[in-house]
Length: 358
Image (cartoon, rainbow, N blue to C red):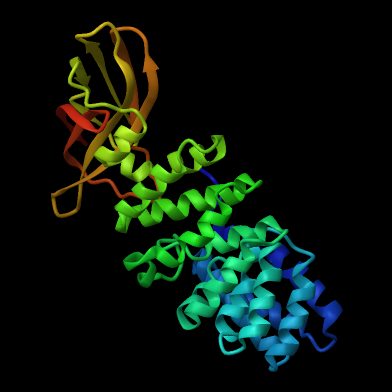
């Protein structure tokens, strides 16, 4: 089982942070800070709780004047790199909201070594127009981490982050930033653009459909961005998007011999198979998926779609064999009971069957 992400915040990390800060601030109480961070509640804290706790602990042991504290942290942060050091911009989020100029400079600096994508969001909410103008400037930065922040920081549905309901309602302020970054040299930045558009598609699908029509075919990079951005719309079988990517209604496609295990044990794999057949000379371009209706605690079903393959199939039949894992994962709780599996081709459900999860 993989190591929990929260364990990135280790005793060794705290010790190395102490060493760097004490080199810059002679009054820093290393033992006091370490004991304040690694306290009796430390083991029970999850990832974001540990991140916030370190930011709050720094506030306790650094100069009370924000300007002094932030200068120490900016110099210290240059010695570290990685996701786990987001407690540096976290300090700005907690204590710098009223210090706009200093804080924006600090967030730009911190994001080069970790990411300010969470910390920038309260600034967007408080200083909307001013902050989005700043994001457009960041989109032109020479540093790809800063350019990514311009996109990632304003995602309407950024996981684990403060919500931006104003952008769920109207994403128009985001689009000029994404336009600037769509052909970025860095895949890291382009992936953020795609993820931002995918967020937008969940609340404003027509906006993303229009962007897709405008960008698709410009070059390989924007084609990839749009394909990744439309992944939710593709799973939904959105007709305009399916047509845009060349997936026609599968009128010529049939399914036979769908075989699904009648029951599966919790922690095991569900095996299933089926045969695709075409009444024409070839199956053609197919996006093949399956949906599982998971039993919820209340007995209702919650459906999730999984992709099997996407290709141009020259022959007029294709055998498909697949298995789905019911091993324990952190993002889903399984409940015993009658589940469903549906086979989907080019956004259209062609057949289904029930199975029992024990």
